Each structure stands twice: as structure tokens, then as C-alpha cells.
Length: 469
Ligand SMILES: *Cc1c(COP(=O)(O)O)cnc(C)c1O
Image 1 (cartoon, rainbow, N blue to C red):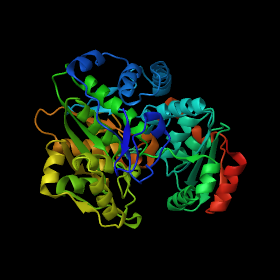
Image 2: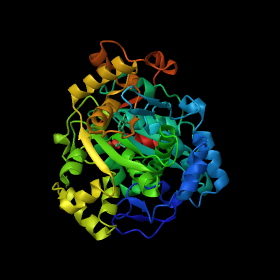
Image 3: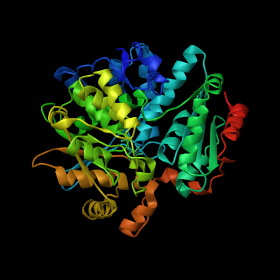
């Protein structure tokens, strides 16, 4: 399996070669030259596998170049009950109304990003060790991504993490999660400024090509291909858990921001998993909902991006969306380059009635949106009927699933975080505190390790120089 760029400017590369890559050199995203086909016999053989072994079977189709023994070791080291809370790894719960919830948030940081990031930590360590290289991961976070990256990379040989966060703007729980890590290779940097300031600093450091090369600066953002592919696994797992045989079909409803999660569902469907529809749920930032309803992709500027109570979906541009549009445009890289020139100009594009018909028909997409009041009402309704407390992002998914579900459709909603991470909204909805896993009791009282810096590129560079691998 070789990988090409959506914009056509990259010679085919192996999985190991693109593993540490952000954007392709031409500004596009890595895509497999074709999708491996999964037939009925494979589904039958995979149905009863433990999560780690299912992950191995799927990853080996994409990760050639990584010896199978190593891949098996890494999937087994990653997907363990001690890390994800149960042997099921992704437990499925059926609500009284028939909608199923697939639990993806039982990893160390209580959000679905652990599902891929934990594997990425092991893959990075293995590939870097093989090459005798080191890596300094630089990122900016307002919460979920940064903590998932830190918990995946802590203690890993040859890897350091430098994570910028806006001082005083994360919840006490989020701060405690990140800043209480005492591992020598994890560096929390609180910036006196906003999340945008943090992102600008990351961009400025990465734009200094000499500094970047000399200090082996890399990222782990949501466009990383290995993250997408690791997420494909739980669509298979969710399908098996929600059905009693491989002749049934399911639909997935996915709370979406950067289109990374649902992109994995799309790939699973293209591989041959019997998926009926992929329902994209957005919050008030409804760029994707608009696309799947009107065929128009109009990314917003950050000034137009609303701050909502499902903050991990507050995006203005869906960074993985280019992967899907690449297929929709029959993999014509010149067309993608031209469409994204329009995106970068702030105009966006229109795929027309034919394009929209294919996105909905052949590709199976549907979309809906949810707002703050919907979120609160859904959290309340599910708590009342089922005694289950769901987080605000998952609530957006359940709201849209209830609205769009057809008679007899078997819908699996992906649970993307645990309510403990978003306690304020839970209290607003239910008038009581969100349940918190025992492992997280009292983490706010643990000693914290964080450097506070001004929003100054040079100060951040100086810190990296002192502490890098
Ligand atoms: C990241 C995140 C999302 C959005 O996922 P995408 O892959 O960006 O679409 C939704 N919910 C939670 C809790 C998240 O952390």
C-alpha cells in the first residue's frame, strides 16, 4: 500500500514514510492509492476477535513496511483493559429508544482521541527507534487534543512534547489532566494569551525551517493519516457489537468538527463494511451540515467561529474534509488544488447538484445540527429515560440521530467524550455534578508542572532549545 497526496505533488510513499508527516509537501493530505477490500469471509473471521487483534488485522492492510510481529505487539500493547477500562475497549450500550451508544472515551483522557493517539505513541516510538531519530512534538491545545497527545507520548523513548495552552482559559479539570503529568519528556507551556496566540506561535516556530529541521520539530494534528486509520477499527468493532450477523447494516451518527472521526467511518464503508448511512452531527458551527444539505462548502474565519458548549466541535475549517472531496472529485488532484485555492481565498466552493447527489447517495452521508438548548434537552432526556449521563458532544450526536433516524434503521451514535470533562454543561442540564471515573478523583489537588510564558515566539524557542531531545 502506497500513499499519494490529494494535490498530486508527492511521489508514492510507504506508511512509515508518511507516519510522521503533517501536510504533504504540496499542501495536500496523504491518501492510500486504493482502499483494501474486505469481503464477507473476512468479516466472518473478524467478528469474534478481541479489539487488539481486530486492530492488527485492519492496520496490516494499510501499514505494510511495519513487520507484522511488531504491529501485533503494538496493537496488543495499546488496546488493553488497563488502558481503556474494559476488555470490550469500546463497550456498546443500547438506549431505550433503540439508538446504540459506542463508548470511545474510556481511555486515559476520557475522549475518543485516545483511541488513535495511544497507538500513535507506540508507532512513533517504534519508527523513530528504528531510524535512530528523535522528535519534538509541538502543539497548541484548548483541551482534548493536547491532553491525548501528552498521555500517548509520556515516557516514550526519543520523543518530547511541547504543548502550548492559553493560561487560565481551560477548566480546572483540563488543567489538572495535563499539568499534573510529571514525565520528564512532557512540557506544558501556559501562554499569557488566547488559543489563537498559541496557534500563531506554533505556526511561527514551524515556519522557521532551519529551527524546525535542527530541532526535529513535528506535530500530531488531526490530519495525521495513522490517526484516521486507527479510527477505522472501531467502526468495524461497533458494527459487530450492534448486529448479530454480517448480513445486517448499521448507520453511524458522528459528532463532527474536523471531519477526522467520520472520515474513518467513510473509509470503513469504502472497504466494504455494511454501513448504511454516515450521519454527520454538527453544533452551531455548521459548516459540514451546510455542505451535506446544500453542496456548498463555505469555511468560516476564526472571527465567525462560535464558542459553544460542545467546544471540541468549534471549528471553522474541517481539516480532513479534503480527503473525502478528493474521492468525490474522482481523485483528480488538479481539481482539488483548484478547489482549495478557493478555500484559502476564503471563498469556498460548490459541488453542484450532481456532486451533492453522489455525496448523499453513493457515499451515504446525511447531516444535522444541534444547538445549546438541544444539547441540554438531550442530556436531560437520556438521563431521565436511561439513567445514562452523556457529554455535550455525544448529545449533539444523539439529538441528530433521533431527528434523522428512519423506521427500522439501526443507528450507532459515537460517544466522543465522558461527561466529567464538561462538568459545567452537565450541571446546567441536570442540576447535579457529572459522574467522574474513580481514577480521576481529586486530580485538581495533584502537584502541577507548567511553565508560564508571554505570547512570544523567541521565549518558546528558547524553552525548546533548553529541553528538547
Ligand atoms: C475532537 C472531538 C470531536 C470532533 O472530532 P473530529 O474528528 O474533529 O470531527 C468531537 N467530540 C470530541 C469530544 C472531541 O474531542
